[in-house]
Amino acid sequence: SSCCGSARNAPKFVPGPMACGGMESLVASQRRRLRRVSSRPLWLVVALSVSYIAITRVQLLFVGAAESHAAMDAETDRASGKLRTALLTGVAEVAVCSMIYAMQQRGRGKWQGANLKTLAPCLAIGWIIRFIIPVPEGVSDQAWAMLAIFVSMICAVVTSPLPPAGVTLVSLAIAVFTGTVSFAEGLRAFTDEVVWLVLIAFFFAEGFQKTGLGDRIALTVISAVGGTTLGLAYGLNAAELLMAAAMPCSAARAAAIFYPITQSVCQASGSDPAKGTESKCGKFLVECCYQATATSSCLFLTGAAQNYFVLKLAAGVGIDVPSPFSTWFMAALGPSVVSFLATPLLAAKLMPPESRKTPDAPKVAKEKLTEMGPMTDDEKVFGTVVLGMVALWATSSSNGIPPVVTALCGLALLMVLGVLTWEDCAKNKQAWGTYVSFASLVGLAAMLNNLGIVKWLASVVTAKITAAGLTQVSAFLVIMMAYWGVHYLFASQVAHVSALFQPFLLMLVETGTPGVPAVFALAFASNLFATLTPYASAQSAVIFGGGYITAGEWYKAGFVFMIYYYIQWLVVGALWWKIIGLL
Image (tube, rainbow, N blue to C red):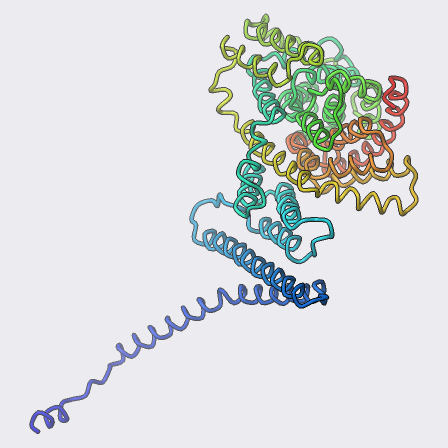
């Protein structure tokens, strides 16, 4: 009892003000933490609930009543499996987006991961196609999943949450992880001849710049015909045209060689945006330089990287172009000559130069040539190798040497002779990035065709065109204008070609256009729409960034040239193809 009494009589612990304050602060802190933790997944719960309701409603709408209990059970199991897959996919996508957001908030330096604002819509588009839109009759679940991944990838290539190589690599990883394609199918295009030809083309572009041969050719032309603004434009265009025969990278040719030369000529003539004198002659010359790349890319199969891709895609649907180098050149020769002569005149109407004469241009060109001195051994060797390659490419149908073998041997010879080094090739990030993105695009586009999506899409659109009662010519005009105009939505020629070339080619063929002319019509359009917007091609961003042409002027000129090219290439092309027997 004494113990109990002592316990009862012991003084009670009464927390002081500091202790009470500390406890209250701790409790308040815990409550705030709980509120934050509980509120963070709230939007996730809402999103998943909405997804569940939406998918359930879709299943109720499209599953329907079965004729037997066995069929109903099978359909129910299939719908339940799709629902589970949809929820798991949605949870995974939301989790990835949440991780990106959390890491962006916690990061102290510059964020180097994906742009969440452009990534989330791309993921949502793919998810909606895969799980909300019902799979059409005649299309397998695997094919529909491949379409969802591909469309999401194209959206990401356009909006750029990552660089193109990163976008295509992530898309390839998703396709392989989900079992939509096998690992071997996904990487098959990395050994494709066309893909390697594009990669080697970048190394030759490096050679033109390293040796200085590209500058020498352009400056020689300018010194000969650069006395007037119009003559200077034709001279630059002619040099660009010659260069296109051996430099299959239109972006490098326009942005890395001819635009810097054009810019230096403009500044030497007193036309500089920094001084407010861009209208003196620079605006006109830059526009001519830009349009010349579109024409030269059409004239030669070697004029642009996507030209090889076009032939590969055409062969994928059973349309082979015989003797591709010579056939391509002859098909493009007539309309290309007209474009070469007419585009500077049209540019002069749209952006008239204040100064019609450029007496300083030949002088500047000759001074630069004098500074360069005589041709170096590297220039001579490089030029000889390139001429030999062009000869082998032009006669590939008779000599039996594949174009990629010619390019690979030419590169090997230049490396052995020390004109190019492995370090030159290894440091070319643009080349390797294009290789990865190009190979991934080719591989996934091939799977779309193998799984029947391309033929299904073409048959659906063709049926609607036929139901509308359009003739062969009317259908051709409508399809071509649609293919051209939709490039307003693309920031990459390769992305556009990858997504739409095969479906539109099959539309043309199924509405009566012969196969080879249909290939060339779409191929030439794929080069000409590069001038449509300031983001229409890789070289657009570089040239637009120079400040000679405003955004409003660019869109106006792009629209006018689209209409002009559409009419000129269709009319002149049809007449020319009749003459050479292509039609």
